[in-house]
Length: 75
Image 1: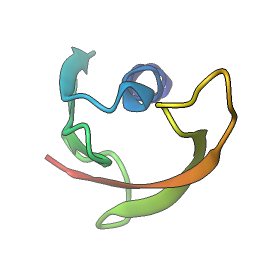
Image 2: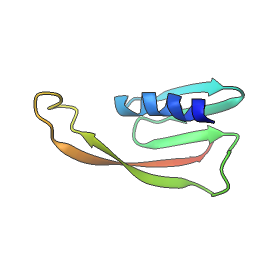
Image 3: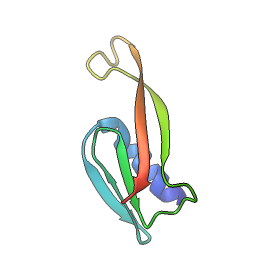
Image 4: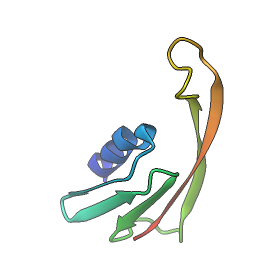
C-alpha cells in the first residue's frame, strides 16, 4: 500500500489524469482531486482531506499558498 500511496503522491501535483497498478492494486486520478483505488484497502467508505500547495502559475517565482481538497474512494 505504501508503494501505491507513493505513486499517487507523485502524480497528484501535476493536476492531470493518471492511472497505474502496483501489486494488483490499481489507482486512477482524475486530475481534479479525486483518486480511486481498487480493490479498496481501507475500512472507511472514503477519505477526504486537504493538501497544502502553491499556485502553479506563479511557482517558483512567487509562492502563493493554496489548499487543494482531495477525495480517495473506491474505484
